[in-house]
Length: 420
Image 1: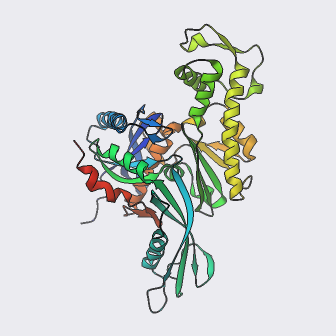
Image 2: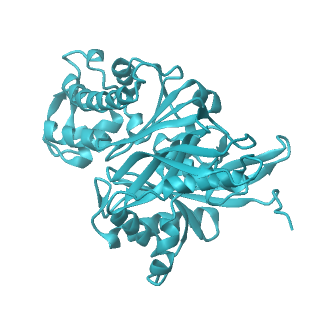
């Protein structure tokens, strides 16, 4: 019996960050007016993250507690148990490399089928991953048929030899297994583990931007993720080990105050552009909960924020230089993530990247929660959209020949036995 597309289907995204754990729950619903399925976010939760430092697990028990807390709150909001989640993964332990896969076309008449494409991608995947790393994704970039290069979709073409150029995304085995173990111990199943920036890109970028050429920056707490699209395809991904928590640490040191107060100042500061303030503009640390009645020039605070933000965007520009796209992306740069909420980040990004810069919020997603437009929820909502796209396309493990990692399947039997 065919699936009834008019019945709502639940998709849950789980973003385990170094500072916060965020959960977004979406329903895939059929919109009679539009004549198609839509995504409605029905719950969104964030709780402090424990047991991680700079993206790495330092305490399994604390991670389990944080994730369980977030999932329980989400369940109370939606009124039913959450059984499956799409888990986002990020951090400096993600590496990317290029690989090729080559196969002979199976049919005697030389017509290339989807099965040939699958075999070519699998051939690229079969190349050994770096020691202690597992494959997360295989991203086809282009195909070649009998030496003819630059082919985007070879299905239906005729040839004898099919070759695919791919970008392989690998994650550190120990980190992937620790995160997976923690999630399973909360009692939920894992649909798959997804590189977070891929999900973010699906959430905040429209097809026209992907065609023209666009970069997406997800400024998290411990790191900043980057994805670049061109001609509708993924051109490059990267993760930089620097994020908004570094700004918080700089403020705490520079102002000689606590991390909590520094975080409040960062969030409530009017702008990080030094020129916007006069020398007479000051803040009182006592207004942010400090026991010290100390007045700090706003210019000084802006200098601290601007210095670290400038470092982030300079490193992003270096990444774009590697692929010869610095200053050369017609659709510009989209910034999102919790760090993008810091006032003045758009202006600083424009100055350093020499490109148009906009704030990115999820597109083609509705809902009753105010977190839809919260930049910090871009990853969690992106994971919902990623899962929903796979579901509505009728595929669970792949979409557009993007192959999800098989690591999850390999550890399910092991970690299910650990669920209380």
